[in-house]
Amino acid sequence: MTITRWDDNVAMGVTHRGIFTGRGEFVLGTDRLTTRITWHERLEFPWWCGSVVGAVVGRPILRAV
Image: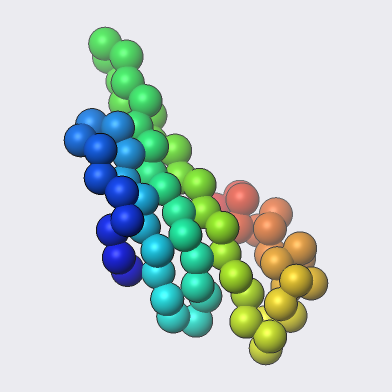
């Protein structure tokens, strides 16, 4: 995993390589009492996981996680 963005108290971007390759970003949202962490990621599925079809099937599963 490689850090690609670092904005203190705002966001951290990453790229990662391995079984799945992708780019993502953790974004912080705060108010006086709470901090919300939001994670957005774009994954590339390898051919042996169904490539585009695997991504379509896996999307609702990964979204639930």
